[in-house]
Length: 402
Ligand code: FAD
Ligand code: PHB
Image 1: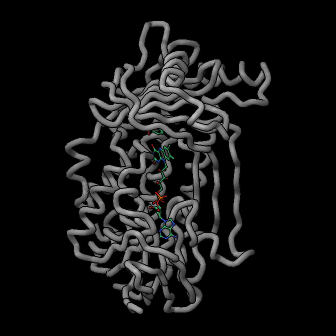
Image 2: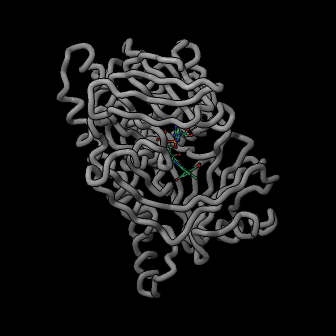
Image 3: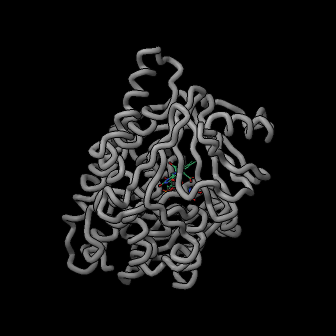
């Protein structure tokens, strides 16, 4: 049995866990990260692409933004497309110069793993049977098996950064958390294709046949999504059928359409809105998807994870440096307010752009009027733009030691 000691035990090496580990490191706070998957699996998982202005600023301030600076694609605007026409929203103009950056989540995770390894602080991949106990005491214990050896980490705090399907949230006793959930009657079929992006900016499309989204990963890789039934099997979709559906939904009357290329990755993702609160039980703090899920239409999930751990790092810094626990006590309230604003925005983007199986002709005409208003009113475009580029950070970077 290997017995280890640290200040903060972090469960999960996704964006939340890795960012928290690095923020703590920058403040001289020790942590051990325990991840159930392999390093390759964590890096190869294709997910988010859009970083808010504040997330970009955070990564730069943390000194982990070199790859982002070199390969990230800054977008000052986006397109909303309906009735065969693309309408431009100039986000930078509407928000006093703010933008989003397209940089794959797997790139973010790869950069953060390299930074973690450079600090020489521990990160265990392929951890089996991860569990913990005594989070209601001042010395919780995380247990796991690694390389055939049972290990125990004695720590001051546990950070539950293990995503929606992790063990941390479900291990909180019944009755402690309130949960709020909406499951949508559709999912997204997503592909990566070897094709140069045919637009410099994202295109969100509401088509008679359903939602579609044009995005990208690099000057040679296009990322596309289209709305499908929630239980759709990817095996039923040939590459030819995927291209036909994507092109039908996205081609506009001026002839714009995505470039076609070899499909190198494809999958179907269900859509859900979920919040669990409070994001704390005793010495266990939940962060990121472990506490909340948003449908990807607003591109907020990874950004919320980054916001949570900034607030948590500030609270832990104050605890270790000044013996203050009031920021730990406020952690959940500060995060949950932002989470609900992101939930509202993601729900609104989702309901404005998707077709619902139970909608009637009235609902659809109202939806088109919503899009017409959105793309013709500066006030409405400003509202979308300021939420899409991201609301101001909940706490200052300085307060988290940056
Ligand atoms: P995760 O990334 O899920 O990481 C959790 C980690 O914990 C994983 O590595 C997991 O293997 C590990 N783990 C699980 N169980 C255990 C255990 N028992 N022990 C140890 N480790 C464990 N967000 C955006 O901001 N912008 C976007 O453009 C965007 N697009 C998206 C598109 C799609 C198709 C999808 C699916 C999501 C998208 N998101 C987007 C959401 C974003 O990917 C997530 O919100 C983000 O991954 C959350 O990070 P996390 O670290 O909280 O959780
Ligand atoms: C992506 O590029 O993967 C992406 C972009 C915008 C979204 C969701 C995903 O809203």
